Amino acid sequence: MQIIRETTEFVSPGETAVSIGKFDGVHLGHRRLLEELLDQKEKGLLAAVFTFDPYPEVFFGFGSKQILTTREEKEMIFEKMGIDILVEFPFNAKSAATPSREFVSNFLCKQMRARFIAAGPDLSFGDHGSGNFALLEEMAPEYGFKAKKIEKIVMDEHIVSSTLIRRLIDTGEVTTAARYLGEPYMIRGRIVHGKALGRRIGIPTLNQTPPEDKLLPPFGVYYSDVLIGGRKYCGMTNIGVKPTVSDEKRVTVETFLYDFKGDIYGETATVQLLTHRRPEMKFSSVEELKATMEHDIQAGREYHGI
Image (cartoon, rainbow, N blue to C red; front, side, top):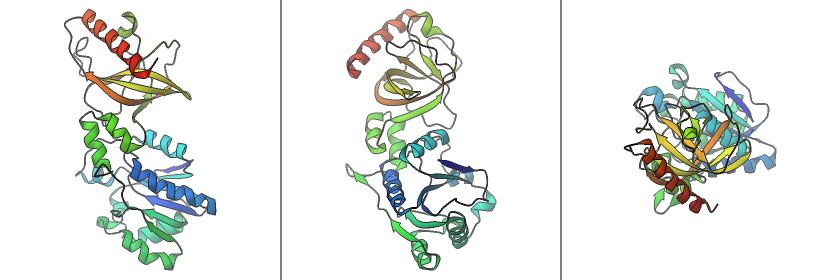
């Protein structure tokens, strides 16, 4: 997958099927859009995603800075799905002021070489968000592309949206969130050295420091799947500040892998949160912490069926 970032001066290597948006969370609604692009590959078009960095809401200061899907996570999802080109368009005062018609004619048609554009009904782009799907339909005949509106997905009487996913993650409902995402909510990052307390008490963990802008569920213990180097492991993940052993208030993600032995420091792990086990707790002693963790591990073996 070709990634274009930190420049507004680029030209696609071929004609494209494009979708525009933030794609925060990459939920089932987004995946329906992306499937439309992938279908166009059979017609010789490159599947291309046009997104923004930072998000317009973050740039203008009226949206949450906490994101569901980091840049690295998004890139991994898009590449896995088969997207050919990802544009991480620099969003700044100058690019934000681009007239909507110029945005279509210059960036989408001239530079992206778009021949097919899939968009949701709430699409907005260009100066003050004045561009919308109606404008794409109006300009399509003149510029030689097809515009297709993709309606939102409704499940369980809910419109599948990033707002819905955000609410579920905020309340720790990771199992329900996975249904609307199409896969478990993930936390992806390098494995770093911790303070080795887990190793000292016989329950070694792999440690990650989540990005500050990554939206995390409530602090606590979750059962998880962990992807490392093309392999999947069953795990138990604690998200929080480890109040029993630390006063630092530094948020970490620590995962115990059942029956795992090996040195994986420096590698990248994708932790997929499957279900919530219990909230993070401050215990009276390390011994009490260990006893509770051992109980959690046994219950986790039953949950994972191992």
